[in-house]
Amino acid sequence: MKKYIISAAIILSSGAFVLSTTQSCTALATSSVGISIIKNVLLGGINKATNIYGDKNAFLGNDLIEQAMPSQLREINTILAKISPSLLAKEKDFLAEAAAYTVNTSSPILQNAVNSLNADDVTRIMQGEKGMGTQILREKSYDALVAAIKPKVDEKLNQFGIVNSINTALQGSNLLGSLLGNSGTKSVASNDLSTLAAEQLVTGLFRIVQKHEVDNYDSIYKMIPTSK
Image (cartoon, rainbow, N blue to C red; front, side, top):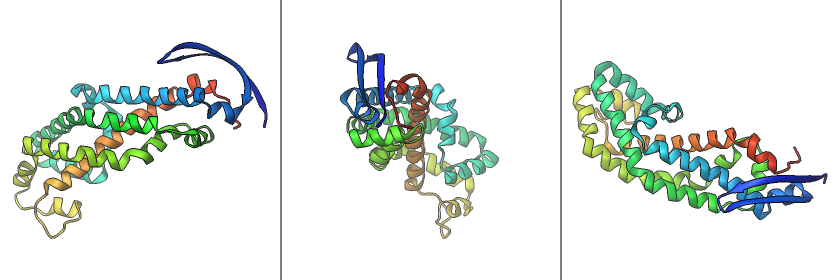
């Protein structure tokens, strides 16, 4: 394998140090130094995401979170925008409150996923496209995140009375039942909305982390040689 001479000043959470060595691309990338660089990039993205989730205005104004909305929830919101704009605003407030309420639950799960990265994961990251690190985090933690925050989302949903408000606004229409795959019912269940909201919150986290990873790829990951 082609050899590279790397001389780079790397700033990590533990302090500053200078690395000057000659190693193969895979050996350096999967070394403790290479893994630390990648972990710090991803942890930086998680910190950025949790800060956004803890700030209502930042959360509501973030396009990545809006893009993370499941198609079913988007269709529900389209209906609400037509029949009750105030209820739609209330639903958005609920989601922002749920984001702040669940961030202390989701953050440790994401951090544990980062800390579990191993040499094989880093090899995939270095050989994959930009953003592969976040994709691996998603594989490791998506289901656990949804399962962990859904009860808290449901708690906030009931606190805001969103389900009753939506069912009252629809006045027996079966539109939501159809959207949620329950064509035989004329009301929406709390469990359905909680699942969709939890999925949006989790996907939104990953989108923010991935953007941070991609934005920092050229400036930080270039310290690790690749064979691409």
